[in-house]
Image (cartoon, rainbow, N blue to C red; front, side, top):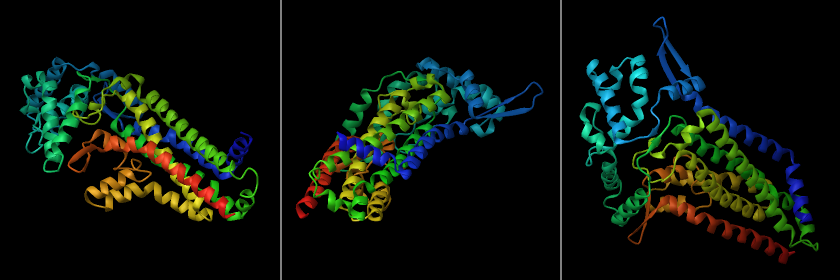
Length: 416
């Protein structure tokens, strides 16, 4: 325990660690605030002049106007009727034909509902959504019963022809059956905000990789490790170093993640945490969560993957002979899943980007997008939901990589 405290103090007192942790905390706040700036609202003042609002003012304006609560078929029908009435009034063929101030006054409150209705009733063979005037009141009443059919057509469009396609279809339908319906909605946390949670996860992993990389490598570089290996604490020291590194990086990640959630919901409004995630991403998203639940699920899920990556960085630090080598390997390993995802084609690339230590951390390849999309891995005629593989493999990676780090240190002890 004394070794652990000393190692904890040694790492925390490093100037670089203090700077990186401060940057991480600032990033959490910035990443929570930036999506707020994307929100807009336009209305006419008493003189008939157009007034535009952005940021928090726009959010409050939208919240005053938006439909909220449980979205029943009757609410869906009300939304369609409002849209079609305005479309007829302006003889519009698209939303671009509607005056901006009219859109915000009459239609903005219903936009998420109508857009999702268009998605639900898209052509099953082409995926093309119908226009507003192509929807009927009967369609709105059948909105929820249409969703399983839409899901089936999406899986067919994206996965048909692959070995194990039928199994993928069954997995998707089973997951979707657990989604609570009817959906709930309240304007607030946006898809952009969830994107920024993913980006924050990537940046925090990069910063913590820099903190963890020299934990063992710095002693190897200075020669201090040769002395440590010959002392009576030579075998206890790696455990203390691993525990300290995991404690510092893990605490930093969780603290920044919680700060992001709190600031995001404070800015967008806590009411929006009750919104079904289907309104943010797709009516056929397989996740049985509200937005608030999704934020915490992503924090914990990404934390598991983050821990696996830190374990890899520490293992690399054990084997590295200097800080530069350890740092280079650490940074490359964080972005490796994204590189593999973009460069290596086919099923092999998908499996590789999933199974390497930082799999699920990135941008377009990040865990969030695997959870809300229909990405399946195939092997031996079987289908596996990629997000499930990422989460199931993370604890295995952690145990394996920590074991390799300890084995690498013990091997040095025998050599010494």
